[in-house]
Image (cartoon, rainbow, N blue to C red; front, top):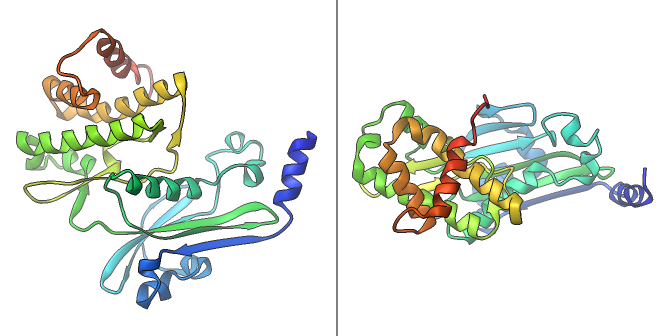
Length: 271
């Protein structure tokens, strides 16, 4: 092990750390009692709505509202990607990336779930557990659910135009700042009911900042993720309209054709 890596690990392992933040607007009443520290958050009981080897998501009711509690107890999908175990000490935990990304979305004016509380715990410098809590956005469904249920809205041109325009703006805002979502799928876009829908971007633990050719590749990936279901539920003209809204171009140019070709081919040969 190099001296630099050894020094970094020694510094990281010097003490136990538990950091938990309850945002000021939630710092009193039943919410504070339920979510006031990380120990209480990991003791919560509720309806499990999602889970994998790294995290569990519970839906809990507090004070007449519902909240999503996402609890992490791992830091990578497999041993190799955890750098043979070293990521527990040297890597940035996914939970931290997720809460930072939600805060960034709000700062950029992108509608997203309200972050209530968040934090993590390290022991001997190694990541042990972490959590974030978001307030439920009422009366919403994700776009994949809407399409999968053949909801009448998916056939309403006016509704589709409003939703498509907002998604194009969300993607453009992120990409202009050098940020890629890395999982920009319809299931991570919530839409509320009503004649003037609002689109909310959620669930972004793998989003990050990039530069140059890597950013270009990640942008193509984001747009290809959106188009993966788009080609099943939208016409070619609707998909092209989305791209032109995103690019803020009146018509397709030579560079647009090149990029569109990469988007269309991105998932070729992939499961």
